[in-house]
Length: 78
Image 1 (tube, one colour):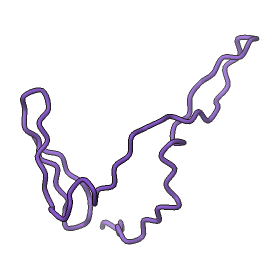
Image 2 (tube, helix red, strand yellow):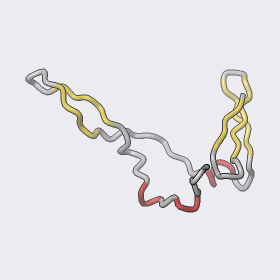
Image 3 (tube, one colour):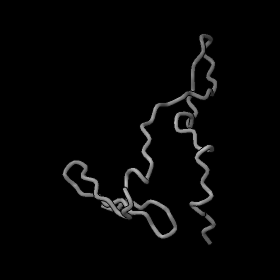
């Protein structure tokens, strides 16, 4: 059973520039994990879809369809 509810999403919990661990080597060649901020261009789905439930994306000559499902999830089809 799917318990995901898109209305439970809280934008304050989303940190777009802090989501991946990276390995850094220090001067003594020991590896340690640090949080490294990565810059990712982020678009809101509202801005992308503009009220529609499906958009087309052309990529290297192929047409892809990005759809919002009834459950609020995104599906990408070629």
